Every structure is written in structure tokens, then in C-alpha cells.
Length: 24
Image 1 (cartoon, rainbow, N blue to C red):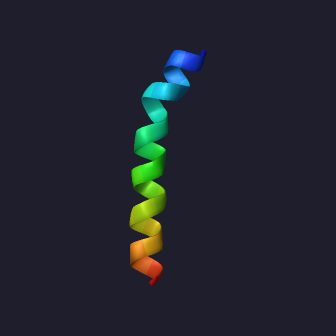
Image 2: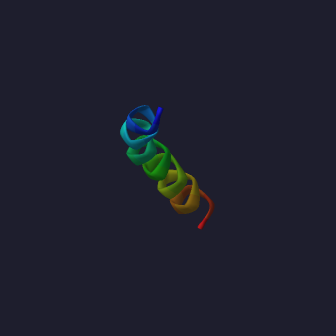
């Protein structure tokens, strides 16, 4: 469902940012 993906996408993006900050 595109709506479900659109709802979860921001959380995934935040997780990726946290991982990047953690490894920097």
C-alpha cells in the first residue's frame, strides 16, 4: 500500500540518519 509506505518512510529515513550519525 503506497499510503502505508508513505507513513513508514519518514521513520526509515530517521533511522538511516541515526545510523549515519552513529557511524560518523
